[in-house]
Image 1 (cartoon, rainbow, N blue to C red):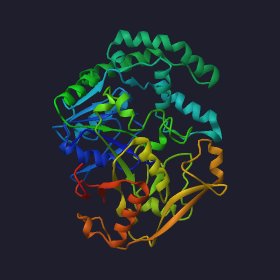
Image 2: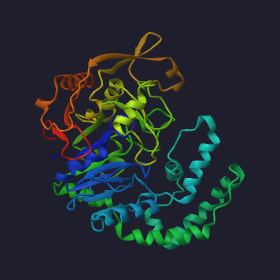
Image 3: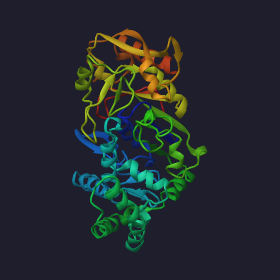
Image 4: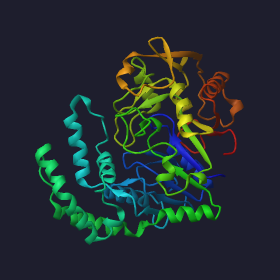
Length: 426
């Protein structure tokens, strides 16, 4: 298998965890390249559900090295809880997980700032996960961040935190009317957490490039989805990192010429958590689709907004990421729906537009144009061969392929690994 970047083609929650876990059976390593513990990748193995926030989705395979790249922001408390939960369930983490020494650290004040900013925005809030992701990236690009290399060195951590304290406490006290940070408690607690994580911290860029030099197969795991990208998403209702396939290079230290293939993960309908445009959103019927698909956030538990399949955004995701094949997920959820709608175009003032407008105020004038396809009644969750799918199911898949301009490599018909149709070799 080639080295593959796995990227979500919508607004996240496309089922990347299952697909990464599936592909990791043949991979030597999985490296996560952006995001933080705001991600929630669900993997089901032997009937047991694992929800992964920071640990890469290949961790259930004992022979697969899992790496957290420099583009990820790490909450040490969350990561240690995740490691402990995995090991308690019999998953071998120690020896199989490495963390970039360059990855930035989410500290308690980042989470407090995240909540305070959201409260300050009022009706204009972005509806973040309150996990401190945005403020951590803000510090990173403001060159005041604290990295894993700092936190595992108590003296270095104390020095960096003291440098930041004046500005942090000014914001807390003067702008948000919050109590100041008690630096002593933070130093003691996080220095201890740093020591516990020190055995995992390494030069992951060197590790992954050495593996590629040896001809080994690596998966690059993205979090969230294309339209939550800080540049190309529905700004400002986006995450704070580059979710596109291009982020795999900067988020791991691997040159772009070494990324051989991009696989787009595409849900058979459309969902979104939080605020922001969702052109195909169902008002009536959205709750039915939410219940059918169990569409609740793996990280926050928040209900996802649901809508029909949007070929316009997936076609644009193909362009932005350069993916050459799709994994189509949650197709089984659509069984029993009499008519299936596919958005094939947008209009504003009677003119066709190719994307959601960058100026989001224009989305109020956005019209969606649909094709209607007949649905199917059969339960398809147990089918393992494409030819055995109902004719209407195949028509739905083929029409999506035509509209997006990409063939399907995998079809997921449930949470378990074996609930998958393999269309061709990746």
